[in-house]
View 1 (cartoon, rainbow, N blue to C red):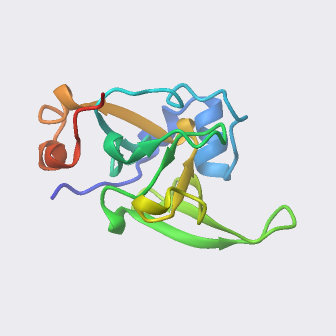
View 2 (tube, helix red, strand yellow):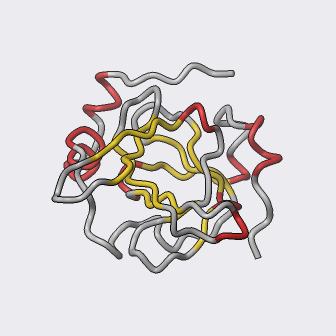
Length: 149
């Protein structure tokens, strides 16, 4: 497996919105993320470290305004932390190696798919189309990407 790291160069290349979300635990406005309605087959990786996070086959429309997934593609690549900000207790989701803030996980996802909803900021993700996965070093994850109807 590849080694995924947070580098100064990767952080410096972030847009102001990507920096605010990933490095300062910000949240993009609902309904504004460019990956919200993406239905192409592929995987979603950390915008900073490149570590694989979610597969298109686990993405669903939750109506919350952010891309939603039922599970991580590689559980070890996602860290879950208690978040007691904004007067509520939630579970924050961060990339394990890049330490990027991704979003939050809730227990109101599709019951037939495990019951979880990973509510993730588009600004924290980079989409890798299935056709580009081998060339970009993600070929091992092809079996987890199903054709999207």
